[in-house]
Image 1 (spheres, protein in one colour):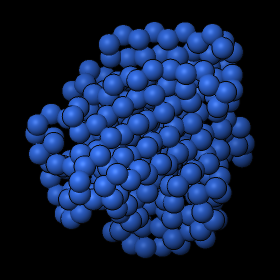
Image 2 (image 1 turned 90 degrees about the vertical axis):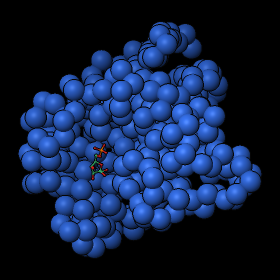
Image 3 (image 1 turned 45 degrees about the horizontal axis):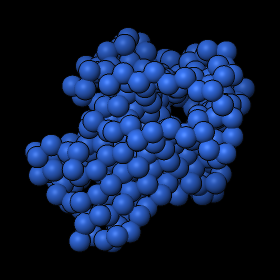
Image 4 (image 1 turned 180 degrees about the vertical axis):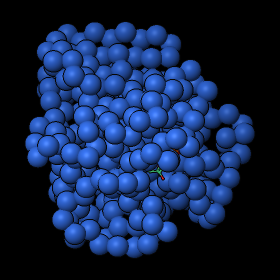
Length: 293
Ligand code: TA6
């Protein structure tokens, strides 16, 4: 398919002949925008998002690696919240219109220990490679991450795709697929709870679920009772549901407009409830596919 690619040295836009498009910031390999064929924006991006490489962009799909949150163990002691991947300059490795992407386009991005600045490498001194593939198709977006241990010693990591979805009114949104799942409620003293029924929103929400039905069971974001997004995970056994609500939105400097919490939610597939150990020479692959319903 004829795919137009505008590739400035910082940003890359791919548009399908049918009109779908994605806009990717090379800083963080962060997908900032995903529009459907009619031009409707699917992702939420803060008006104050850092798009100049000065920090992680607030919105779209930040890539969380090698730690979710912060940790005083597992080799993550010196790392910033959510790790360095979303705040590093990735390389664009090229596009393919392989049959895997059917009528779409697959874009590959890479980040390795050689790309890191000395002070970031000092925070996490392992030899690694990340290959992030983004496949835009009609009605769906797949993001796949392959982590390789290119060094001589094992390392531990967590990873998560921090999706910011755009909605019209968070108070009309329900999320299905978490029924009966255990979760850690970070908005309620990290208490462990069990989800009864669909997830709804009436205040700050920050829940780390391990869905009972496993990764292949779709997570469905509905608005006004109508399905909007369906997320299928591969090798990502957890998912975080986050909405900052009034106070946390006010406290985040790069969260604008301040009432933007009404028009967004994060549903974030990840491997965060445990630590993955990658032996030397080994690879870990995980993916999500987001379908427009
Ligand atoms: O994924 C939810 C979360 O961990 C929340 O606790 C909140 O901190 C959010 O991520 C945003 O984190 P950030 O580091 O991007 O400000």
